[in-house]
Image 1 (tube, one colour):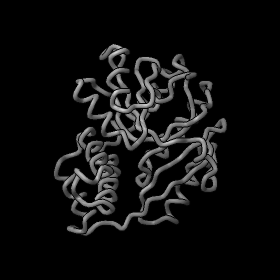
Image 2 (cartoon, rainbow, N blue to C red):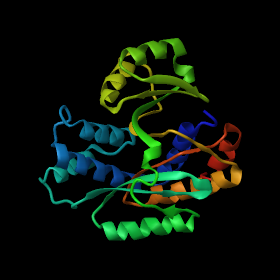
Image 3 (cartoon, rainbow, N blue to C red):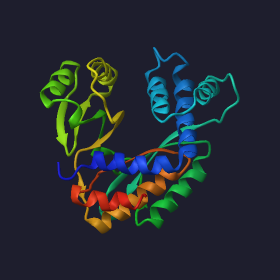
Length: 252
């Protein structure tokens, strides 16, 4: 892999989230509400809700906020009527971008997201214009200093993971989404810590960026992630390690 875009995404996302904790809690609440609405409040049978709650806990969201979001999703408290939408488009340098959205007003959100793309040198596209470049996968990032590669490979593949790769200072473990819980449990049982554990989209190809384009793409991604209705942003860029520090410094 040229560059290490997953690591770059983590650094960029963490910088943005640390600055906007309140907005992040709002997004996490929406994800919990929708998961509870579709699958009920039992995390033993509703894996989507379990993942949403786990993510909320990882970001130090208070328990009362989590419980309130579950109750809203199940109709025990009044809540928003949220729709799940996916918007696709292109950023600077032809980078493919997918936004997962929860909104109570599709028309408003579409106009606002289109404006963000345009301001940052991109354009919102039609449905499926870039989705074909991505595949849903379970992804775990494991710091290389915490585990020997051979042991990680043994634990991960035994649990059903597809692959283990070295990417800079982390190992990337990928699996089919249906095996995510199984792999997560195996890593936990083996006391192998992760920097990231989520079901996400991985791209089949990457656009390697120079410094100027990297800053423009990161500017677009940050602006999208700041939008209250956007749950996650996935893009197929790759930032070489030697440029990553300069790009993430802009987030300080």
